[in-house]
Length: 420
Image (spheres, rainbow, N blue to C red):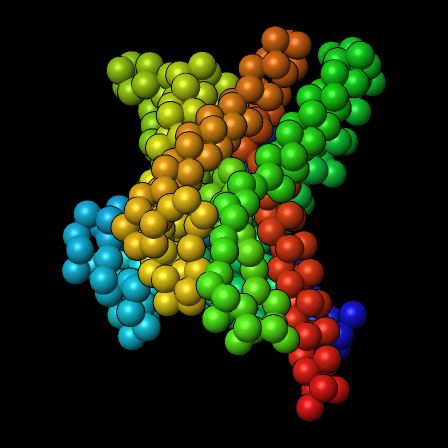
């Protein structure tokens, strides 16, 4: 392993460690015991799901309680706007325009974070513990200002950490932050399951059943994520002669799941937002809606399936540009056997990608919901969803691929230097 790759891995681990340390820095003026007591009683609903994605930072009311979700929400809004308005979409493709595009996302993140932090602060005002203790230990107006600034600082730090990991480390920074938050909750989940077995609330065979579901889910994710359709490509004799000493790829790899982990993250961010806001409402109509949007409800999982499928198609249409691929092939003298270069090639590639995306979207929708249905049928008293497993496995696979790509790049640079 090269020194450069080791440095990138160490930088990534260092920033993830910083993220985990921030999860233990509470917002000033909060009674942490009251907040933790509240989250312990809501572990099986939307608040428990939000807490899991934050790596238990929410139950401590850390400065990173809002996590990276405001940034993801801003990204979703911008992606939808870029797909709707051609001017914004063109800005995103240009180098200078991309910087402005990212700057708009950052400013939008600030606005969303401030709105959410003020909402959380006001909601805490009515929260009391079993002994009648208030969740806020200072003046309400002062607390709103302090908590808004603290949570905004925390979210901005997370956004900066994510960007630093992407630029200087290995893997996608935002995905790795979510990955680290989910993984950090695994030890406590194992401990909680052991306690349930010891107390007789869960049978040992149920635990074995859950492990089998997890293994089957992980196996299915790995199998599909590594699957791809290789479209054969031929090159003219002139191009082959010019590139005798170079390796020419003779196929176009098209993954079954072109959109990666993004659909699951986007769908979770959208569905958790309304259910979190409605949680604790005393209005009977809002309480009914909150029950329907509970992560342990069938309604929530139906919406999860639909949103994951939608974002799988939406994001695949953005990441896979058949027109650009066909133009590049034409410039390089390449062509798909039996297909005319140009528009016909683009149409053919779109057809292949569309069929693969259909099955990839169905797969992602089923993985996001089916494990929960199976586990619920077992009578398990806690929430278990396939989204968390999907995110963890996909991010791990993507990170390993980038490490391998970095190793191959270093070997190629070494061989080129020796050849020179």
